Every structure is written in structure tokens, then in C-alpha cells.
Image (cartoon, rainbow, N blue to C red; front, side, top):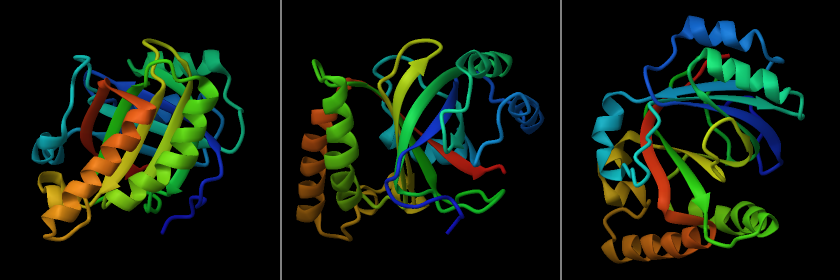
Length: 227
């Protein structure tokens, strides 16, 4: 287990999404020097694991990220104009978020996760007010997502500001590599098909309270902690 704080206490995260060539480590380090020091930093990108997990890909909006940079802070210490400048230097899009970690990412410094990161970018369910989105997603849906899936890392990011097209939320979930191409491994139920279907039904019902499935993109990447 990493030294990242556990539990559901809220923090702040700057997420930068990339839709073209992923930035190099040198480019990331140069850009990070312009920001306050983050408590923890993760970088994920598409690779062979993404191809193996292609059964989970959803692209209803026609915009799937190729990589993602995530910097976590204990306080609202990042100036928004600086965050946008950093994202621009990297040819990415900045999203400033309030985040929780129902299951903290289990990576130590410079470790790479052996499975996949499922990154879901979504718009909220129609007509859902801000306070209801936060309450349902953070305090009601989170337990359902943990109980119905074989996720070993789970972070929620409620988007407060975006430099480009507005998103309402970004979900980051880590799964064992076996779940990349297996329904049963993904939904943590062994060979019990009936239980698997019950998990899928329960998760879908809960998810639809929070997000618009027709405006939710999903892609799997490989995650690395880079601090």
C-alpha cells in the first residue's frame, strides 16, 4: 500500500487529459515545476493493455483520451490560470476537481500497476443538481461500485472547472489484468453467472442515477505513480 491517504476524505486534483501523442516524462517534469508540489502524481497512457481491455471501451462522444496526468493536493493551492498554462504547454486539457478515494491507488513511488486503469469521463444525468450529484456519487454510489466490481483502486473526481469542453466527473478505477477481457473477473464473482448479472444490474441502476450513459467515455490505460 502506498503512503497516499486512505478513506473517503476529500482532496483536490488537477487532471490533465490528452487526446494526441502522450507527453514525455521530461515534458511532464518541466510542466510540474510550474505548479505547487503535489502530494502524489500519477500518469496513465494507452498501450497494449488498452487493446486487451477493448471490450470495455465506450466512445459515444467521439473523444477518447490517450493519456492522463493526475496531481493531488491537500488544499485548493493551484491557481487556475497556471493550471491552464501547464495543460496548454503539454497540449492537454485541464480539469480542476474535488476528489475522494474510496479505494486509494495502491502504488508506491515510481511503481507501475500490473493491471489496467479504467478512466471514465462523464456528464451528469439530466437535471441532476450540483448538491445531488455530489451526495449520490460520493456517498451512495461509491459503495455500490466497490461491492459489484473487482476494483483494487477507485477514485472519484467531481469537476469544478475545465479549460475545454466541460465534464461533470472523471472516474479512475484500477482492475487486475485478468479483468481486462473477462466479465466474471471484472465483476468479482468467480464463475457465478447469476451473481455476475445481479452485479451488472445493480451497478447500472446506480450509475444511471449519476451519469448520462450516452455521454460517458471509457478507456483502459496503464497507470504509473511518478513521484
